Image (tube, rainbow, N blue to C red; front, side, top):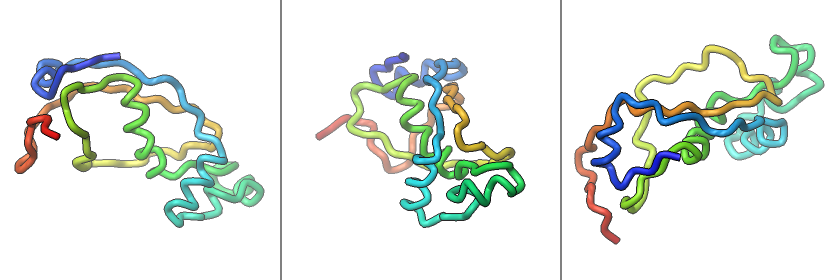
Length: 127
C-alpha cells in the first residue's frame, strides 16, 4: 500500500508504478445489480440462458461496471492522507476493446502518469 502525505508527495511519484490490487471476481449478482442501478438490462448482461447462444457464449459485464470498480480497486493500492475528499474529475479516453465474461477476475494496476492542479479546486484540507 502506497501512502502519500498529500498531493505534493504524490507528485514525486510521477512515473512510478504503485502496484496491483487484489483480484476481484465479477459475478452475475454484481452484473445484475449494476443493470438495475443503471437501467441497462440488455440480455447480454442479465439473461444467462439467452446469452449462452449469443456472440460471447454467456453474459458479460458492462463496460461502465468495470470503470466503476476502479476507485475501490485503486484504494487497495494507494491512499492520499491530508485531503478532505477525492472526486472523479473525468476521463480523457476510454475504450472497451474486449468483452469481460461474467465470472472473470479483474484487478487494477496503478501508475502515476501525471499530477496536475485542477482550476478552481483548493488544495488545502479544510473542514
